[in-house]
Amino acid sequence: MELGIYTFAETSPDPGTGHTVSDVQRLRGLLEEIELADQVGLDVFGVGEHHRPDFAVSAPAIVLAAAAVRTRRIRLSSAVTVLSSDDPERVFQQFATVDLLSGGRAEIMAGRGSFIESFPLFGYDLEHYNELFAEKLDLLLKLRDSERVTWTGKHRAPLNDLGIYPRPVQDPLPVWIAVGGTPQSVARAGRLGLPMALAIIGGQPERFAPFAELHRESARQAGQAVPPLSINSHGFIADTSQQAADAAFPAFKATMDRIGRERGWPPMNRHEFEQSRTLRGANFVGSPQEVIDKILFQHEIFGHQRFLMQMSVGPTPHDKLMRSIELFGTEVAPAVRAEVERRTAVKREA
Image 1: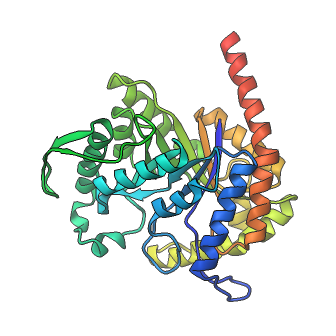
Image 2: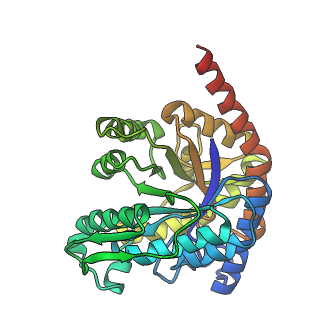
């Protein structure tokens, strides 16, 4: 199993002190976090895209390009690229460049986006939310698969035997589809034979098992090989369970309450937070052993090939994030990999 981290590089005020880190500080810290993740043996680091004042990254490919020359083996992914409001040609060129700089470690995680700020910013109508994504994904895959492309759609000028450069090291450049639980999106990823990143940030994980099966079954029905599945969730690791909970709760609450005011969610309380970090909850907040147990519990449900954790849910101090990354790479990841390998060997022998 591949294990990694994703982040939105949040810059919201610390709920205890009111202090807000600058974008300069957050981006410098982010590059240090990616470097450490690489050094401790994690497999993937994803950087998300937002266009609002409480996040420092609106252009993930630029951050990943900087990380590419400071790392050696970790895969570098968007998390996500809001493809509906972007230009597939530029997305492909940017990530092909990251792939070249990194020696073949770039990935695109494409999604429709859970925030809508990019649509008016780049001149798109939200009435075309679903149509834009389907059309632009079709073009992105054609650009990925062929050096020269002829293509016609509704929302941009056609391409007539035009080339797109540079070409990446990887052929094909990996494209994952990020979904939040919409069956149509899940089925589309399966039909196209594309790996899927399933976000689980609330509720009991077993409720999402039908999405994993729909992804696999849609691939089989379309004659595709069954593509990989990633589970993406919130989490935080500290030396003890209590330290993890006490460090994570204020930041989690500040972020979820702020977004909740926009979307009509009730405020988070400590009891709900504690429930979310039990074995059958959504959040991976705890000691290394608790996180190991929870990843393996969900692996029994989903049989997934990748797990990504968003540690910086809210304004978490940089030093605590660095310790969380260290524990993830040195204690959690080796134990999870060994147990998944053991389980796989047992199934092969059965």
